Length: 365
Image (tube, rainbow, N blue to C red; front, side, top):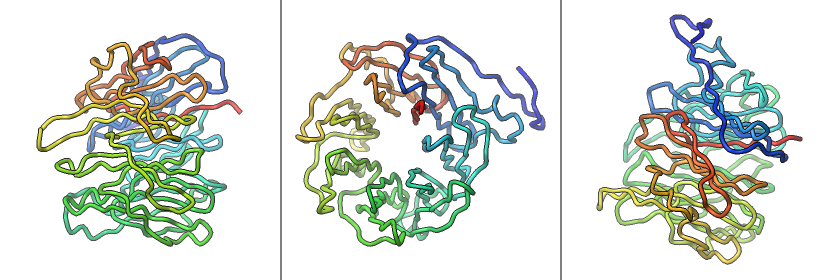
């Protein structure tokens, strides 16, 4: 252990392990953001270096010993843009901005109940629930998207959307925001907000399904949107929106907690809870973005999916097509990150922090 400038706090140094084999591609490594339990201030950051096949845990605290509360409470999103790493820390009401190589802290952007971040040009865009964390059918605080100047880290504009907005996607001059209404059980939202990027105003809404969550564009002029359902009668499902008409044109009956699109393949995993059956249903699948058909209902081919308790994070290497599944286990203790080959065979696994969730690729320019 080593002491730091934190008052009465002991900083544990990062831990390092060897896993897998060294690789040399433009993807030189990845960061993994562990959410940590709400109210515990246990969000942590790990890093895997492909060039040395080295996995390091809890690197933020060691890189920033003068930050009093370390990374913060509940890591909700992680993205690299330019030479900076952005971590959205939900219940700490901030976006932490770091150097993408050293993880040294550059600053923070204060946004209440922030959720997800995306970028276009010199700006970052962050969804915000705006109000406190509370389940309330008549919740009054509408959500918004904040527009941030990445040079100054100042909020320069906001755009009101629906209640409890989650993921967002930017395609050309349009932004699409998934309104969940997640705090308003059973009065969920069911629409995407469409924002004109020039005026930064909401111009329309697209009805999709209740309790929306993920929004991702593919290379075929389509937007893929997920619904969590209502956990009772309405199942989680994947929806396809034609961007030319901005209408829902298809749906795939597969539960989705997380997804990643690489090429024409949509990788999905889910831990779908049912209050009727009082249990989780776990799903791993691949959907073809062109045909909208399910290619496989389980991309793990060697039976090691039996080892995974709660699939939570999902990411596919852009070059090697290795599949990474983050297991949150019991949501309290450290999780596990599994690496699978493109044909679904386990290559290695490693212990992570609590609730491993979000991966950001570090790509060499």
